[in-house]
Amino acid sequence: MRVLVTGGAGYIGSHTVLALLANDIDVLVLDNFSNSYPQVLKRLEHLSEKKVPYVEGDILDVPFLEKVFAEHEIDAVIHFAGFKAVGESVEKPLKYYNNNITGTINLLEVMAKANVKNIVFSSSATVYGMTNPVPFKEEMPTSATNPYGYTKVVIERMINDVAASDPEWTVTNLRYFNPIGADKSGDIGELPSGIPNNLMPYITQVAIKKRDHLSVFGDDYDTPDGTGVRDYIHVVDLANGHVQALEKNMAEKGSKTYNLGTGKGVSVLDLVHTFEAVNGVKIPYEIVDRRPGDIATCYADVTKAKEELGWEAELSLEDMVRDSWNWQQKNPNGYEDSSDGSSN
Image 1 (cartoon, rainbow, N blue to C red):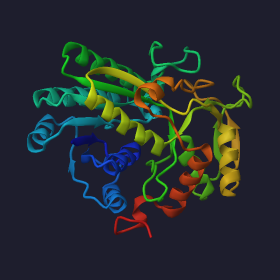
Image 2 (cartoon, helix red, strand yellow):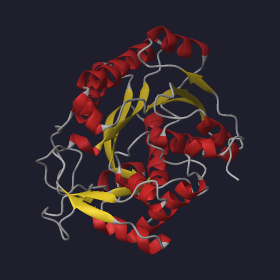
Image 3 (cartoon, helix red, strand yellow):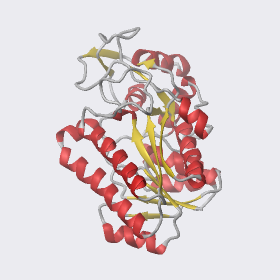
Image 4 (cartoon, helix red, strand yellow):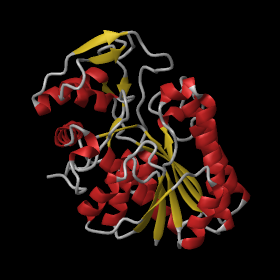
């Protein structure tokens, strides 16, 4: 079996490629490297001791996509490719709607033409919006508070409609909660361009003294310590969830949706204090105003994934902060820190 992994050089994509290879599943990575790095592929080859074939190009380029499917035998697609910065999506909504939604339409049309009707989609807990009570369950109504989130809502609906229109399709939406951590080797990890949008890379950049302090957005939420509560999941657990979703896809048709989280809420300050305790590094922080669109509490009901996929998160919060710090320390300048594609 060969799986096309769009966005396979990105943070979650690269860890998923590694998990697929570990399960003896052939991959073909497709990436335009707009928010990722070609050196990732060298490191994946080093870690897996396997060749990682790839094609460089964009899902907005239909002739390119058609060529990929014509020249390679592909059995299924795991679709990560898309813009993902919430703040930028508010500033540049058309950029996000065009890239994420139009790109996915292109992909689905080319897949249908090539008779490759099996897709696992990288969705997000942002689709639960502002009003659903926690824990979030897959059958709850979806909405969003920003253009990035709406692209996930629309794409989920789109691929479910495709599956409803043609019984040959198998589609799975995986709703991620808050992935952090890195491969235990420290060779691949999260490397945001510019100012990090996510909490953990901001913490590690403060720890390594790239940034002076962490800004904590709000301490007046209705939570135990007033800071936002989220469901942090180790990216390695998340990657393994894709493998199990793919295996289920190969076994049965139709459309399915699963939460991938731990089912436990952790506050911003809990995460900071755990990072400090495990790694012996002080993280200076200051409380600032809430961000618009942030909800107080977000965590998953993970019953469905456990019962239907046989999947559950295994790695602890301590593992997450330890592996995040290991990645940052080994790669203070990101993927530029090694010329041969592996860490020293």
